Length: 467
Ligand code: FRU
Image 1 (cartoon, rainbow, N blue to C red):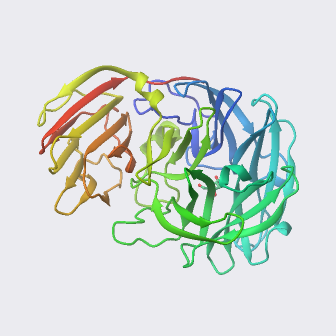
Image 2 (cartoon, rainbow, N blue to C red):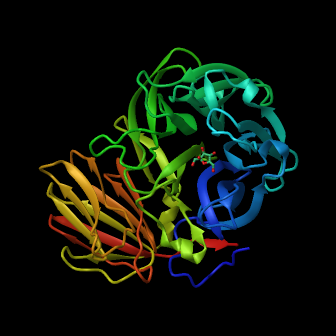
Image 3 (cartoon, protein in one colour):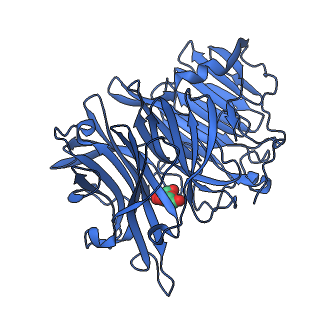
C-alpha cells in the first residue's frame, strides 16, 4: 500500500488527483439526488498504472470533495483484468453505471485481434455509494464481426438528449476495426439491459485506428460526437499529442443517416485526454478531462517519485457562443478567489501556489506572458497564432516543448494556475490549453509583457478534499 504524503509540495489544490497511485479517465460523471459524482480509472497501489478499478469522489458544490473509496473493482470473471471506463445514467431514482470489463486470456495472443474480451457490464445503486451486483450485458459475441477485440467505454444516454424522439436509451461504444479504423458503435435499448446494435458512426475518411471514450450530446441544435482517437498523424500544429481528443459535429441522426464534420480538438495542451460530459441538475453541460497522456515517451511527471500521477481538469461548462463550442471553468470556482489584485504589465507577481489570472486586451496587440521564467505564452498577430513554449534550460516541462493554435484575435486570457498544472482559456473558452509544469517548490510567479492590457489576479483558496 502506498502512503499519502500531505507535505508533498506538488499536491494539487484546484484539481482532483488520486489519493495515492495512478489516475486516468473520468468515469460515470453525473449529479444524483443533488450530489455530484466523479468516478475515475484508478490504480491506487502503483503511480505508473496497473489493474484498473473505479475510484470515487463526491461533492455537493464542486468545491468540497469527499473521497468515497473504490466503487467497482475487478473481482468477477468478466472484468478480471480491469474495470475499464464507462458512464452513468440516472433514471427513476437509480444510478446505473456502465463499464467495460476487460479480460486478457492467458496465452500467446496479440490482444488486438485475439486474446481479449471486452464485456459491457452494468452495476446499479440506489444511494450512489453502494454498488452491489454486476450484470454482464454484452460480450464479444454481441459486437459486429468486422471489429477487433478493442471495443469499450460505453456511454449511455436517453434518446431525447440526442435528438431522437423515442423512449429508448442509446449506448455508444468505442471500437477498432480489423482494418484499423476507429469508429463508434450505436446500440439501443428500451430497458437498459437488452441492447440492439443499430448504427456505426465513423468519418468519411479514416481518422486513426481506434476511437476511445465516446460521448454524444446536443448543444442547442448542434449534435456533438466526442471521441478520443488513437493513431491520428500530426498535421502542422494539429494532433501534436500521442493520442487526441476532440469532437465532430454530426449532421443527420445518431441512429440513422449522418455525416461527421469539423473535427476539433477539445484542448490544445500537452496533458488532456478521454474527456466526458454530463448534464447537471441546473441543465449545464459540464466536461471533465483527464490531465495526462498515455504512452508518452517524451514527457513525464516527476510526481511518480512521490507515489502518484495525473489529475482531472476542473469541471468546465460547455456552451455555444456565436455557433462556436466553448469551454469555461464552472462558475463555482470563482468563490475560491481571495481579494482581487492588479498587476502592471512588465512587473512580476509574487510566487503563489494556487491562483487565477484574467488578462483583458485593451487593444489588438501581441502578448507575451511568462510563468516562472520557464514557460512563455505568446500571441502573435502577424501569425495569428497562440503558442505555449517551455524554455528547455529551465526544465519545468519534463520533456514538454511547444503547442500552438491559430486564433484570429486574442481578446482575453484566463489562467487557472495550480501547484503543478495550468489550464489556459483564450477568448472566454474558444480555445483551451492544459499542461503540467514543475517548479521546485510548487510555487510560481507570472508577468505579462507587450500589449495594452489589464491584468487582474486572485490568490485562490484550495478546494477541500476529504480523504
Ligand atoms: C482511455 C482508456 C480507455 C480504457 C481505459 C483503461 O485512456 O484506454 O479506452 O477504458 O483507458 O484504463
